Image (cartoon, rainbow, N blue to C red; front, side, top):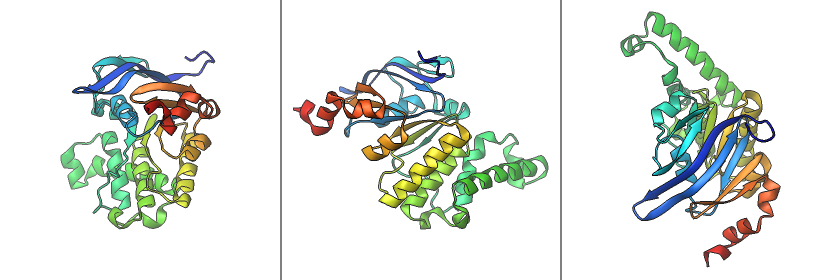
Length: 261
């Protein structure tokens, strides 16, 4: 629990991560509270994506620990993270370009499917009934995210902004408790960014999904996040509300390059 009674979903505790002689993260600690949208910002190379990779087990820190839902791990495994409700989107879209929107989102249900592979392949009996239930759930996500018109379209034929929305849908199909969003607005035009902001806020409001967001667009960060963590050269230099962070001199210096001189 936080000092004001908020439930802590994730605790990042003194994380150190290095690759050879390069320090990607240096003694980084922070909490993530239930149902909040927390933004992680910082200049290029600050360690933001590395932090997400530590949280969901793609990277293993040399020091420190991650506590998720009360269980502390020095090494999280990606499949464990996924099975326990941590979902992730990526800077570079990681979809199956030849598959339809619907089928891409259905892949997000794989961890939820209990029937054996042979029965699933045969579309028979209990496996068929299970697939129908999962498909209903995916159709609800498609409706919620307003992409009914492209449900049968191969993802590779979609414009970039819609592909990003499909990737968010696939993450939602896992029913995440903690959603890690790595630059969900990267490469989007103004209208696409506005749509994505709206959907992120809708997901947070409708499902209470806790989110950790990396984003370079400061307007987006200030509009949709409740708290902001600032990294620079792998170190946490600020934490607070968007207004507090915006007026922090260390943050201003980092973004203007003053601290890099």
